[in-house]
Image (cartoon, rainbow over all chains, first blue to last red; front, side, top):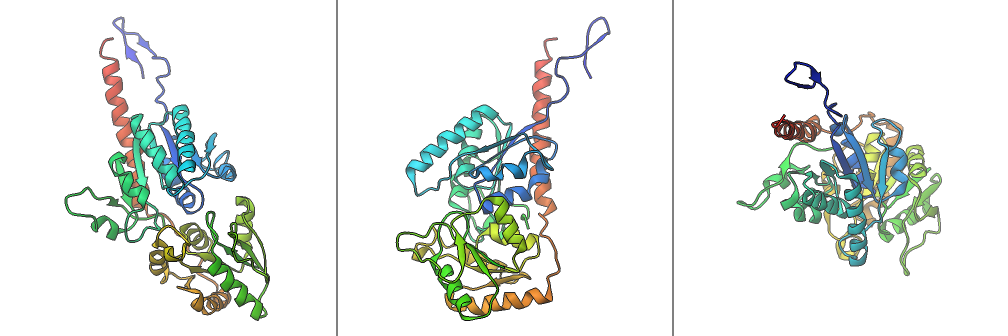
Length: 177
Length: 180
């Protein structure tokens, strides 16, 4: 494909080959990560980078099936430890600035919250998949992320239905298992 | 080997104590635990070997070689067990005992109680029965069904990533080439 010029020649635009979409897939360690790995097929074909809280996960996503060359680990944190949270937020912001993804996908928790919010501020499109562990109400991060998530999913139909009337509800589209 | 894991964040004394009592009494096979860091007054088991954390590779190996897995009611443990057809005993953490930030694990335990291969001990009193039931289940051998993610979920996310982004790209390049 190229641009047709006035002389009828086809001029190839530099880098016209449609670039793979840059996706940053994010999850903290443990169950959130396991769920993120369950979703891998969803970004097959994208230019994918991973972000987690455990350096040991690198082997799982670099140079293997569904491979990516890029894996980042930042320190773990949760919403009850302020200092760790701030440090994690800064580290996540650094990764976002380096990656500049078009899409951020996350299964939580705080690391996913930061990636999604910063991603949104940088005009990425954002996906929140609330952990399947949250069977009765959305996780704290999941509730906080509402305003920033373009695609906002719960893995339980009851959680999607149980939201306050009038307020926007997370959607249910099945679960990772 | 029976593999015990309390997940990657917090210790879980109540479960560790239950396992320690349970395996001290009988002729059970070797038990090994990944127990996070017990607090200053934390319970340290005397009847089985353990480590605070394992790297993911060793964790996976222990997990897959175990006859049964004993765990907190965390999704990582549950999905990992289901995906390789490993019988698993789960006990939920309780926020009122400082074991987690909220009680979502109780909901998880209730939801997954009916799945084949999952044995729920709602508290330490019910642990021994659940663990013995899990050991018995090994002999029966599970159906080996792997939990596949719902295709709808994959499609929903995939469509979001690709269709919408492509449309936006097309719009962008249409505007970009307008002046040529």
